[in-house]
Length: 204
Ligand code: TYD
Image (cartoon, rainbow, N blue to C red; front, side):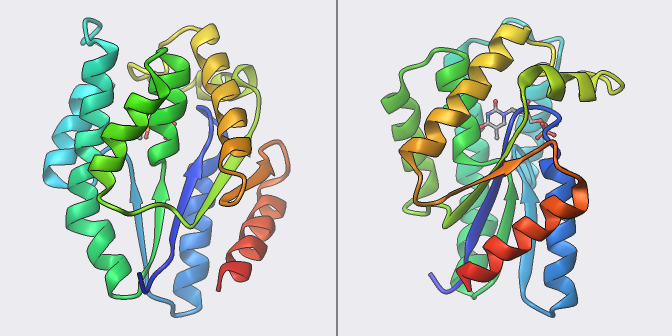
């Protein structure tokens, strides 16, 4: 692929979305070709799936349904946006991707790791992130930061669930050490931004 694929991961309230926007602006200032997206959603089909996935009313959703819908949204985004952008040399910045499904649906919900990985490999059609930032903060601290917002279906899950997600990300960072960059999510925003820039520069 001509372009680079960079993903941003972490528990609720870890600060990744702020950092994606900041590094996106950095790319624009450098006049580099860049695409910023977030999951689930960012296609017409994905946005409808996002509504279903995050709807706090849909408490009956089974873990398998959840895993399939996230991977369906991903399949659409890969096909419509990510693949074409990478092929034409853009850097793609994605707020959450594969590792969210592994952390939330496998470590969090308890679905078999290999099965979640397999359906996602099918959805990703040969694409894998080149670089993944993990913004590390405790589930307690992260959830505390989301208190002010209206909590969506996943944010309403128990602290224990979010602790398993947090532990899952730590495992993934070891398993996929070659593409993970670990960031202390408690650092000041500008310091984190600088760390993101430094890691991105190394990729080019
Ligand atoms: P969003 O509002 O985008 O949350 P955040 O700002 O934390 O990224 O909602 C996405 C939610 O979906 C979030 O709780 C994590 C969850 N999620 C999964 O469980 N699996 C996935 O594969 C993805 C992409 C997200």
